[in-house]
Length: 430
Image (cartoon, rainbow, N blue to C red):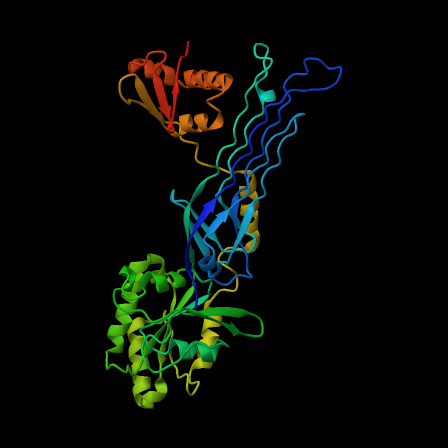
């Protein structure tokens, strides 16, 4: 079974805490602060790995957490950063983050950071100044980013075979390639896409047998998007039409249904070049098959080649294979060296959304106020409020941020309680 969707929980490693330490050495009085910084937490990184084929491994394990950074130590020893947790995914994986960011991993070696580790805290040596020569506080490391992300696999194929259920797609790909899909004389035999390789002396083409679509597939009918997503990357579509449908339906109506659903799902699919394969020619009289081919050529024009095929007798398959090799360009849509260069450039020019800077002040009752917002919550997470010097540092930072003035405008008086990120403390800026 092909697993083409997964939802996993990723969590960056927590940053290491800064160290509060003072130099203690014989014959060196007043050595001063020498606490080192904590290391950054590890990131969770997705790596495109061509040894992977689907997302099955994520059905067995759904939680991925990177290691935390080590704490700082005395003698100005900085904690080491936590190692990145590398998670391998198959080529063709699309990653969607909760903030709307999308990563498309198609080339082996491509990477995407999906959960950044927290930053390490600073040691007390970093807070030494001419007016504060013996700081007795340090910073805590911050927690890493954590969230659920969605993975979807879209097959990397050159040619996609589409058509109604039981149109003969599985039989066609089994004869053109060495694929061995399940074949039977009833609809919906194929419940997952199958890949096969069409070989010639000088090149190969990857063919994808897309399970039978039905009317309304673009809106989710049947397996809808689950199947249509796998033809999004193809460069050519082979529309397989049954010359003698078992249910007695009209081949032309079947053709129109599939084309309509492809266009509704993605405008790019509607613009892809087509080849029409009239299948199961061995089940109809030869004159009828010839007449049907002429009718379709007149209807579709010269831009859409029409082939009368039979997987049982191999009729028309050689010509179809030659046409596929001719119609699909040899070069890839994007040259690997261009993509590699783009990836190398991205390593040096990384643009990330700035951290949230908004905060708000609200009354929480008589003599109590609540301050909310990412910057003030990060500030509280950095320090031990039970430490008087750390609390004084928090008050100085809040004053520089303008929070104290906003509290005073809201009626705050020194000694009132202030709640930030669930922590309540008495604030006395004076």
